[in-house]
Image (cartoon, rainbow, N blue to C red; front, side, top):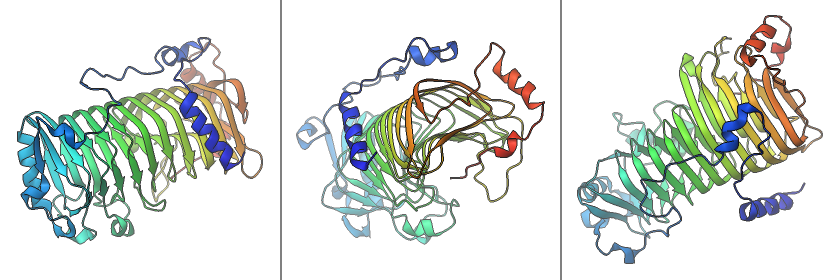
Length: 459
């Protein structure tokens, strides 16, 4: 299938494909997804519709306009405008209904700032210009190395405009991979927050983090970093609930979207991903920690030139669970691992110790997934021997190889295939009425060398 065909199919899917219920003949273990496929992401905190138009200047009537230029910002890309932003924030946050304006056609050089709430009332951060970080890591405050633009304890705040947030990350990427790197934009401990229309690019490490927050809506956002930039996750969701990502285009050097522990009620629709490491849940369970992710839906995505497509990754030795996840209507082009569950994830220079405890992965649905794989194993389920994956459903899958035939790899996974599934997933173990965890433990005690074929990924 050529590139033009993929693009046409993707556009048609955007226009025509509804979010529909799963068939009612699925096994009992998938009843939750059959009945709650759209996930009840809470909307009660929102006064206006998600599809409302971006704020324009005519809507400033009745609001307090706080322009960073009025506080001494120069906007020439050379002068340090940090203090002007700090002072403007203090005024905007203390007002009951205000707009913090970053004007267009200007470039503002800003060092690390922690914008702290709570604020007095509704607040709009209107970014029409470009905000850039210092490009020299030596200019960074050693007391605050992990955050560039951080927003905390906000409620009913909107980030809008067609401006750019640029982390100037190139010199950071050349340094140590993960030590003391800043993240470009962080929204933390906040609720009822909208982010719409912005471009976030060249993060020093992660580009956009949503952490410890509830009811966050992100739409029409572009996230960009070079494909070889290390650890530049596009949108990273941590310990957050009721998050919507819609109409977002993401291309980075790491996960386009990463969802980690404590997150639930995550909905993604109309997502373009590539280059990057795909749309990932995890990693979870590192250093024997607890990881929990549940109730995640991806509806309509196009993933291109990525090392992974739809990935769940957990470390050995952790505990917790990943459950009730649905991927539907996804087109992939030249993806190395289109569908992968890896419970032996090991992002370490040393070999990871084999451990028996593991997160439980259950009730995962893949439906209407098409595209091409650059590797022979288009589908990989590499699950724990002692805590197998259960309730895995593949329905209407068509993955072809770019260089020959493809296959499905299964290790310790129970599930079903329905409709056309290419490559065949007949290696899935069917539940037989016995508790699947106990059954797999019994089988593991029988020995055998199947464990030598377990797939480990580090990307």
